[in-house]
Amino acid sequence: MDWVDLRSDTVTLPTPQMREAMAAAVVGDDVYGEDPTINQLEEMSASLMGKQAGLFVPSGTMGNLAAILAHCGRGDEFILGHQSHTFLFEAGGAAALGGVHPHLLQNQTDGTLILDEIEGAVRKEDIHQPISRLVVLENTHNRCGGVALSLEYTRSAAELAHQHGLQLHLDGARIFNAAVALGVETADLAEPTDSVIFCLSKGLSAPVGSLLCGSSEFIARARRMRKQLGGGMRQAGVLAAAGIVALETMIERLEEDHIRAKNLAQGLATVPGLVLDPDIPETNMVFLSLNDEVPLSASEVAGRLKERGVLAGVVTNRRFRLVTHYWIEDSDIDQAIEGFREVMGGV
Ligand code: TLP
Image 1 (cartoon, rainbow, N blue to C red):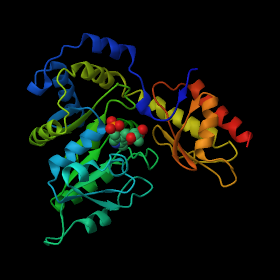
Image 2 (image 1 turned 90 degrees about the horizontal axis):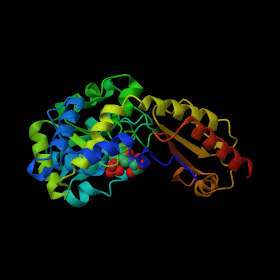
Image 3 (image 1 turned 45 degrees about the horizontal axis):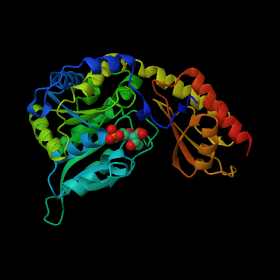
Image 4 (image 1 turned 135 degrees about the vertical axis):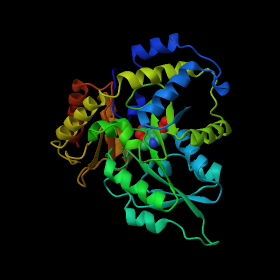
């Protein structure tokens, strides 16, 4: 069966062009700095983000962790949202491995943190308190519906952080989706930040890898952190080659994923039993819930959808996340809507 796999954009397979580039990649030992393909990818990435330097890491999780470790020492504190990926889904790495203390603020529904609350969270000079070092934002914001944080907001947050001597790190796993949705240059969106990660292995469809970008001095420290975390990867130019193709060919087309997400949301909004706001998908994610009358859990509905060839992400007992990507076509959107209609019609 050909699955309509809407669980995540992480399920994307490499394109034929990526596989060709991987086979032909010139490689070397990257721990010696001698992999020309990785060096090229790091330079391209830094330039796309408007930063001095880039670092190829195996995952977004390692990129965020290496960044936090490079910004903060043991007992220092970083400020982040309660719905952020770093807080929810990165296995508490900053605390477990770095002794860095998370200070949680409520994410607003638009993915932002209230600036006054950030200011209020900054610790005073006091031996009882940890030292505040870093603010972490996420763009697009996954759990808040794939919403894009604006350039103005990012600038204001950076200004505030800097006023208080803190740095700003951006988890830009999907920053290209944000830039495409906002109609701004990615480098402008990343400009106010001190460090930023983005992922190759999500909407850009490369098989593996993320890039951490920042100043040369910061990336030198992060390179040491990557080594400590076991992320020095030797001849990983075979992976970087796919990443270069991803950056060259897969960014502008993200708009198609956003249009399909809107169509999916609009279609699902007409299915009895489902609750969603068709205005919400700004990028490639559709979140929806079962209304109180539906006698099935989200997992049970997902099980029935699977029998119809549709794979949906289950977020909570009543809630789903559906993500569009390169391997999802218009006919898949129709199949997903039809699948939901059949399942909901049968309960
Ligand atoms: N997100 C995955 C899951 O872990 C939830 C997904 O399916 O969306 N930052 C953000 C905003 C992310 O969404 C993810 C992955 C990461 C970081 C981590 O990237 P990886 O999976 O490469 O470690």
